[in-house]
Every structure is written in structure tokens, then in C-alpha cells.
Length: 159
Image (cartoon, rainbow, N blue to C red; front, side, top):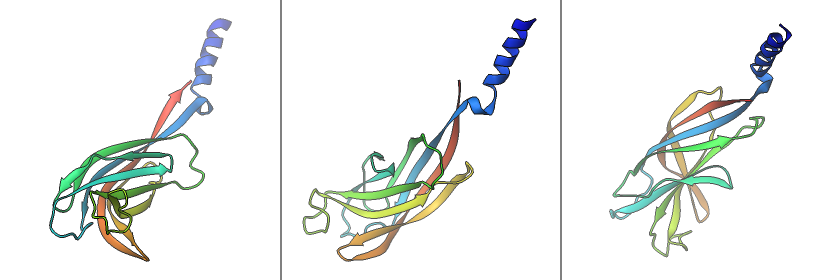
């Protein structure tokens, strides 16, 4: 009888909330961008750099297009820290094969738009168009928009 009770207690103990280690997963679907580059009408190659921490980033595949690139790519970031302070998703849309005279094009690439977005709260999906900002020499201006969906998911590991 005592063995069964110990077994039941063990099961109850494992099912307590304190014994679950919770991780979060941020899932970001990057769809497309509009009006990001007013160039001379040539085809250009673009990709997106996505990050939540400086040392934790992902890049989409490159897309060659005339205008309004579409990546339709999902990036997943595990978040192994409590959300005491708000976290932000940072995006950079990069154009490849730039002309040498362009500011920031020393490596043949230039950031044509950036965004910083707060992670969704309460494990809800955040979807829509986000304005992109571009920094040129001494100015900052709106430069197109990017369509994305973010979802914060809870992953429970039972020990």
C-alpha cells in the first residue's frame, strides 16, 4: 500500500507546475516587401537578416527580382530566458551587388531597410506590415515596408 502511495505522490510531484521547465519559441514568417528600393529599373538581389540578439541571427535565401521581393520563409528562434524585459525582433533588408558609390556598399551589399519590433505578448500571433527605415549619410527616412507574422509559442519539457 505504501509503495502505491509513493508512486502516486511521485506522479503528482512530477505534474506540479514547478517541475516543468518552460522554453519559448519565436516563429517568424517573412513574406514580402514593398517599395524598398527605387532603383534604375534593373533586377536586384535581396535577402533579410533576422535577429533577437546580436550573436543569434538568421538570413533568408536571396531573391532576384525587379521590385517587391518575396521570401516566404520561416525563421525559428528558441528563447531560453524569462521575459522580464521586453525583447525585440530586428530585421534588415539587404541588397546585394551594389554600386561602389553607394554609402555602406564597401562589401558589395547595402542595408535598404531596418525595423525593430516588440515580440508579441501573451502568446498571440502578431501579423501585418511593418515600416522600414533607411539611414543615408546623415538622414533617416521611411523606405518601404515588410510583411511578416510573429508567433511566440510555449514549449514545456517535463522532468
